[in-house]
Image (cartoon, rainbow, N blue to C red; front, side, top):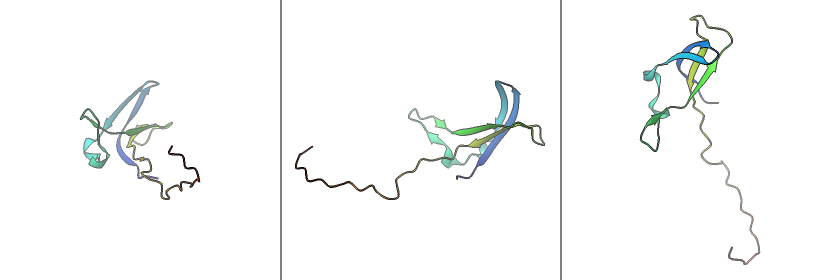
Length: 87
């Protein structure tokens, strides 16, 4: 499991409104991706907790550090056939 990088927090104000802040200086540059449009993006996870912490906050914002596997460790073996067909 990847390291969780907390970059912000906030408070759930109503059922459909969360007020939060993100610390831009805490974002490691390797997690910022450039889109096809040249804009910069950061994937985040937002957790809403049942109870507030000691600062009155019940929202945590973390960088989504999940990355898909680049390549399988073992290449799948392609079975050989006796077919002489070109396709």
